Amino acid sequence: MTPDLVVFDCDGVLVATEGPMFDIFAASITAHGLPVTAHELSTEFIGGTTPIMRDEAIRRGAALPPDWVETMNTEIHARIAQGVDVFDGVLDLITALENAGVPIYVASNGTMKRMGLSLGPSGLWDRLSGRIMSRETFAAKPDPAMIQHAMGQTGARASHSFMIDDSAPGCQAGINAGVHTIGFATEGQDAQLAALGATVTNSMAEVRRLILG
Image (cartoon, rainbow, N blue to C red; front, top):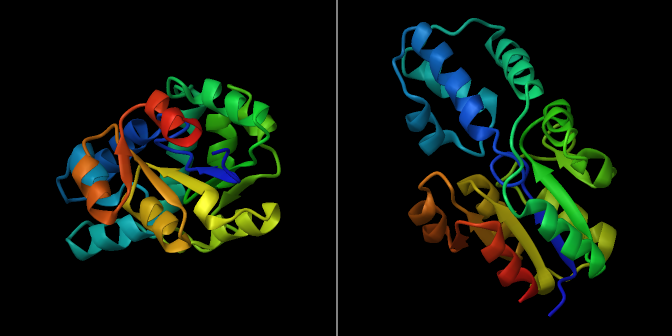
């Protein structure tokens, strides 16, 4: 079956940005009075938004300044500008989908600026221009708004569409939209994503097999 639509998350699916980002978050939250590791933060907040993390850190005792979100965005953009890896198999999968005539969209809870920095060097930013969505314009995942928009733009059927995400909010968005949802687990989140009902895999080669056979 050739799918009607494939929607990718960005961070942690197309590019390996989650590790560097959570290192920055953990160092700052720890410095502001709440000792925490990058692994602890990623386990709880992967796929979420920085304001949600800020609010919870403050609730738990971190003395974060009013401009913390903006400061984190600046530091993360600077780190990503140094370069991040595209996951093995991503470019081959996107080429295969394009060759099969399958529409491709990106749905991220990150910012457009951050995606421009992370996707630019590989050419994915230009390649997917006009089909990249963020929480700046749409409701953040787990709301299915971004996926529903992509289906509306392409006339895709939910039963013939796929969402690929590494986070609980993203997989829940796929399930809420009624599409086939693939949990891309490279940080040990297999059980968490499977519990939501996602089909869990650890490689893009397996994602390709699930989508294209």
